[in-house]
Length: 72
Image (cartoon, rainbow, N blue to C red; front, side, top):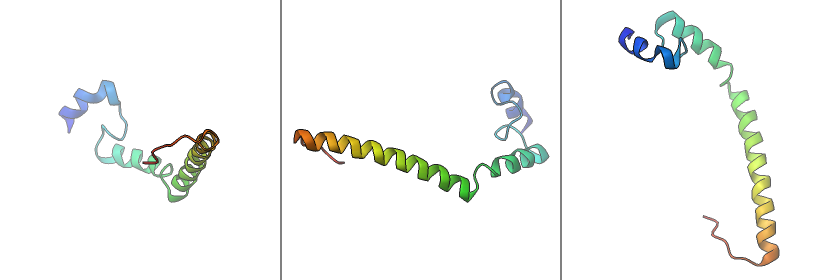
């Protein structure tokens, strides 16, 4: 509503979290392209590969020193 908009305008501006009606629909349409299934899958796959490589390196170091680790 207008009261919330005025309170948060300096912080959130006219973005999707601070507008209603047509401006909200416009912001949502713009954001929808960033959250398409393909975009999310590409991003999550990249993050998974990166984190898996970090884990593999850490496990390699641990294995070579015969240290015990908590996998949880």
